[in-house]
Image (cartoon, rainbow, N blue to C red; front, side, top):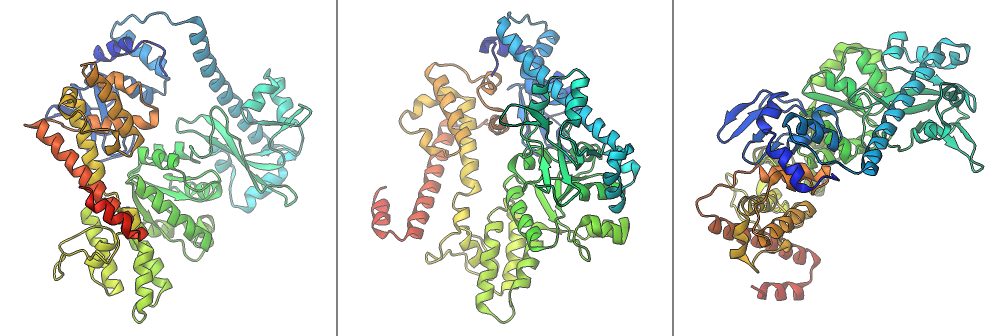
Length: 578
């Protein structure tokens, strides 16, 4: 959290015209009261990056990044909050008050530690790479030759070998003047019960991991001989590395400037694809795809092409990845590798042209799943199989946010399952006017549980918050009618309570100072709400309508929940309560 008083931060923000600041990095064009441009944080062809000079914030409706001029400079130049604040203060000729020596020292110490760990990991990567030209590295060279990797690949990715020695790296780094405790904290050494340090990686193929800014942050390591366990070993979490928040070869993929990225399973798959001239490829770091990795991919790419193995484990991984990526509203497609166990083997057997053909033949995630689930069942002759087929696809359909896309998929699934589209919509808790069918949702068909809370409910909550934030005084007119129970999202509740406090104090909501009260992963959601155009002729009427709509949707959700539970007594009691 920032250590300067809120009024100081707000002064820097007020005197830093956000349009001028952003324009130094991104070409902007005026659009109504705001400015629009191509987002610098992910690849896009149509501008979705909005800058509001009145509110002093930016928000990308494509990748979700947002914040003030300070957070924009932080992201663009990879600075800490204080570094960005000082940079903008100098730019705007704002004199910052002196901070305590202890605070400044702590900030500097963290920054210095990070730089030290970057440096140690870089030194280690070069040490391991150097081992390939020595006698000890012969097993690794043989392994790379067997995998058809040449010296250029090894150099490009700084591949290496950790010698079968207890303290080879440790001794080298100590000889360079580094302390054992720092080598340990950087993730390069382990420590036994007696407090003695030793190399974390021994007798392994080394894959250095770089962040998006090309800084070495850790390692993935694979055994060469069967007597070494585990098969794969990663750097443990450190100040600069977390395997769930980084991706292998993201630094290479983002420089490709491609709108889409291929997601593969392992390091060798990545290297094999890049070796064949295709740079927009990444892999997770020994784990299933995580939310943080999905956010990272959305920042840089418009489409994720999943290219996992074709075995049962690969299929399950694809299904999990599709569900996760759909949560972040990312375009997802799947390419199928046939005639080989994985991407690496396919490229060795068939080459670049056949692989590019597979990319071009990729299917959207839902069409891919329709085919996969369809192959499990006898849809032409078995009624029970048709029911199971639709049931298998419902969780994925519930993730589709675009109505046109949903209509197309529902129609296709209905055709394949030989059922009515309206029945599928009913299972999703939605009602559609379908040609040739009566648009009625049967009370006997319960909505699919994953779709009870609709997009309409979330959007209405966002609209309500945007009006309240734009005119906090309106709160007084709704005393007792509006409280945090109208919201479920923790960020929405937090913003609501901040607005409420400002209303009590008869203060305006300053977007810039509000940003300092939220964590980094919440800011995008807040700027999205504050970027909504809250101008309307009758704000009192708008708030009244939004509250009524939210309560109605919440009531529907509760009724569906009670119906599903089968508790008719509670349902009747609830229905009596108007």
